[in-house]
Length: 439
Image (tube, rainbow, N blue to C red):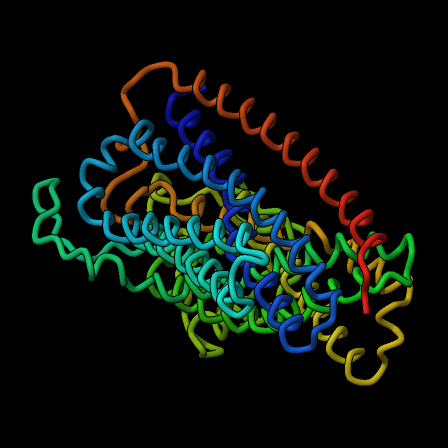
């Protein structure tokens, strides 16, 4: 394993773990603040019970997310020193704002966790709102830095150096809006469906438990709205990628040859040797319309650039297809939930429906992982799109494969610890419910 592959794999492992914690950190505080608001408005004990149970989960994932996020920040400098040498001064602003948001979130979460019966009820609820807002902003600031890597702005590149740096323009680059919207919705979908799925699984054991019934409904409110909005965000993002990163779009769709019009490819296995996609469904003119808004528009294929400038097609295409497939499935489940909530509420407690929600528990996070694989792999071979290649940014320090192995082992152990903690928390929820007075 050469150092470039080791460095990329280490970042992939670190980001793959951290993105789950980041999604939960952006969403779970919103769910617990909403649940507390319902308690304040209705006085029903069950909403207070749910809020306290979710706040414990938020605390666990906040602590783990702080650790994994710190690891990522160090890895940027240790693994990619040439990147940080030039990019540090340009994208320092969103990272500094992210740190500020994280600091505020930590303080507000502490107030929320230890402020029960010590603060005015509405002041306590406002601390939860502050946790929610700062958590969402923290995620958006980091996404802005990643968006800059896909759409560099705010500097002039002269003789291998960045001059005339404008950090504000860099932060609000052409890609940040579409990526921020898409990632925020993805965070709400993945976390809300996971929370609903856990409670649905517990309901399958005993469908009379009001605690889990209300928890599922509360989580699905947010998950369903986000899941129905995500296809619109996906279309917006795809059109943006078609404009700024045509080779990423070509890899996503495995479009080897420039076509006018271009078919939309569903499924299939790309073959670089044959320059085609096997076992795929082709929708005539579909890609032209989705990418350009014109059924007969020309869409650039991978043949527009040399082989060394092409992103890996197989990984990018399969990841994209997986993300889209899961996204549409969860949108369909969300639509069913809204329909059942309006006219057939009895269905929501049926065993088959709870089984569907329980099945959906990990799907949102799988879609998030696939989406980030598309974002990062589809940008290759560039670490700063069109400016700096990834191979030119990697550290010259030998033996990066050893740090990759160590980090992988650490994250595996961390994951096992989280699984143990969350299983303990889930068991505590059941015990907590049995002793709680619900109304």
